[in-house]
Amino acid sequence: MGTKLPTDKSSGDQSPLDQSLRKQVYDSLRDALTAGRFVPGQKLTFRFIAGTLGVSLTPVREAIRRLVAEGALEMQPSRSVRVPLMTRDKILELRDIRMTLEGLATEKAAALSTAAQAAKLRRIASDLLAVRSRGDTTADRQKIREFHFALYAIANQPTLLQMIEGLWLRTGPYLNLLYPDYVASPRGPERRQRIIKAVERHDAVTARREMEADIGDALSYAASLADARGIITPARPAAPPKRRRGLSSPPLPGTLAFA
Image (tube, rainbow, N blue to C red; front, side, top):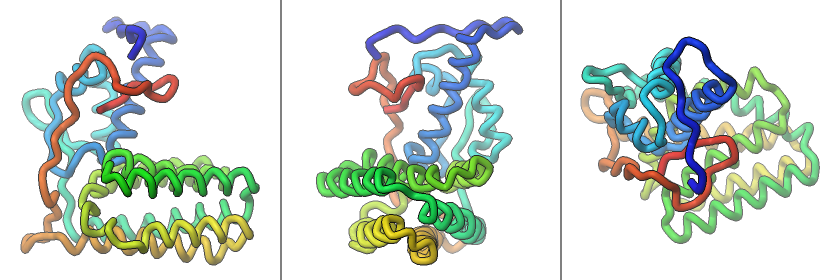
């Protein structure tokens, strides 16, 4: 970052600046999890998170407590947490819930969408194709998340959106399992185009069907990678973000970011 981040205070009184910092840390961890920045089973120490984001341990501890309560992280010894491993049955359960809720959000979005909103979805889909063609898996995962949540935001259903975000916290780390084999198929880009066309013509039924199929196929593939014990683990370990003071590109306004 070009400017120094505000430091937090450990006292009981929280200034607006302190509260903003705590929210930024939580949002950064949440976004990293939903975008697949961390892999299932990956261990993260409090100090690693604090060092990466350039903050003290206090806001990190608070953010971790929230994410553990939400089931996105598991507390471990020695001031560390782990991204949960998942069983085949659990991911299939989450698949079915996501299909239902995200299908509903897509249906409502298609009914309400404007031409400008559909054009935004088309731009994101185009950007996703571009980053995928150059093999940038980090940007690829970010664009997948961006496409889905830009679509769901159109529905203007805050409670529904919050529920979907909670599900992505649990399944986001499994985005890593889709690379490289699953994403090599043209089915994803083709489905996104069909969703966009359905949104443009307010065809809510088709839009919902395509989204449900997209989620169903992706998470069924992830479930198929379970070992003999029914545990799903990464096909290969992913390197954790490098600890650094600055960022190679500026984060979104009001956020901190992982590499």
